[in-house]
Image (cartoon, rainbow, N blue to C red):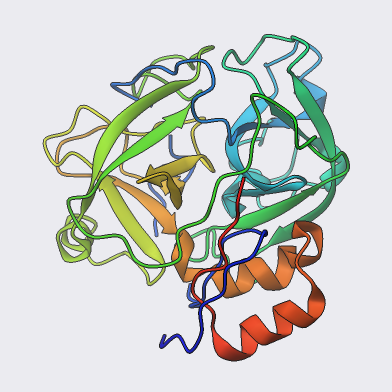
Length: 299
């Protein structure tokens, strides 16, 4: 989309384009990763099903990404019962009262003075989300509790406003399985992957990809997201570029991971999250009218 203006503000970074497969493991998933160092990936959140989280950490179902002091961006499929069928009927969407968000930790089960926990005030699932095709696999959580600006280990990340180039080196992270048949990780793991050309990836998935999807991984396999990593980040050059969506198994040769492309949903993110992001309604109207590309958030 042609941009007519560029603004710099003390707000969240946004730009615009609105867009939006697979029945193979939509609860995609880090294989081949290493433990994250303290104070890295501070936007990473754990999204949990409350009734399973009486033992802290056991309720983890998906990752998420803090994008403002009370807004988390994640995958829509996390809130349809594919991941939580033990407690719901298939296809039923999960109520916000069943969800909590935890941030500030590297260990899934740890509780420290830095542990941030919040219930969810509002869940916004993209209206185009299709659980059979994984189109528009994106959702917003509005937290009941605001993350303090001074929080040292849970901080918002800036969103990518333009498409990312193929072959760009990026980072994936999460508490998901460390192998396709393995167990989840208690430690937050991360790994480097490369952006895969869309046509190459689409061919691998038998032309099943949709607009608004991007692929990342290694065509030779060995490194990938896995079950439990869904909704988590694909970060390229410090910008949140993708949301973990699906894949064919975990780290299989020839099948890179598929992610929801953040830049394709800026207009939707702003329209549904702007009031919680501190963006003035008049300013929002101007942005939506002119398609501003860089409203830079200064942390």
